[in-house]
Amino acid sequence: MKTVSFTEFRKHASTLFSDVENGEKLLIVRHGKAIAEINPVSNESKTPSWKNQGLRLSIKGAELSSAIIAERERENVL
Image (cartoon, rainbow, N blue to C red):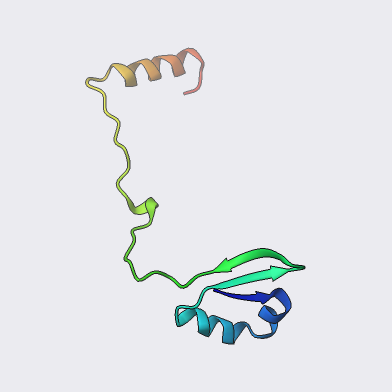
C-alpha cells in the first residue's frame, strides 16, 4: 500500500489513479492522519443488494385489506 499526502494526491491524481488501475492500494493522509483508502475494483461480478430479490409477504384471504379499508373509512381517509 502506497501512502501519499493529500497535497501530493491533488497534484498527481491522474498518475496515482493509474497506479490503482494496476493493482496498487493508496492511503491518503492529511496532517499525518489517514483520511481515505483507495483500492482497485475487484474483478468479481457482484450483484448490488438493491438488485437482489426482496422479501415477499403474503396473507391468505382478503381479511387484511378489508380491515384497512374499514379503518380508513372510519377515519375519513378515503
